[in-house]
Image 1 (tube, helix red, strand yellow):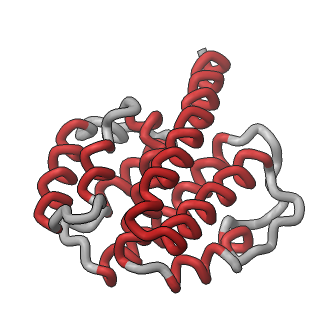
Image 2 (cartoon, one colour):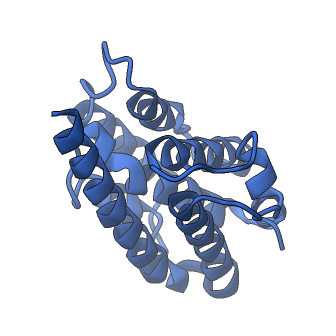
Length: 186
């Protein structure tokens, strides 16, 4: 099943986890650490109310407020837009739009940061399942996005732990890429 199909079928919690996981993997571009989005992840846990999400989202935005401001780095701008676009209310309709946008933005960020060429003209082809000639960093991000949605669909709230693990792995990879890029630009 393609990423687009998985997003179309996901429930509200799965969509929120998907969008949050994309943002979480890109948080090194915003100057955040491994704990920055933990309160938002906790708000997705069983029993947490929508008010928890709203309050924790605002706190996260305050922490990362300066990131992306005044920069021309497209990857940083995309990551900042993901954070700013997060819906204050965690309704299925709003979260679906956000999760879809985060998916595109995260794949585009990985494409921008990958030193290998991606043969597709856009990330939309990747999301629809056309993976031939995909660059390694984009391929890994696509796999992570699919895994998060599949885990959430198959395990519900119990899948959050695995979704966080997948996100943490991706964040570490992106942090290494950003660090290498920074050293090269010097």
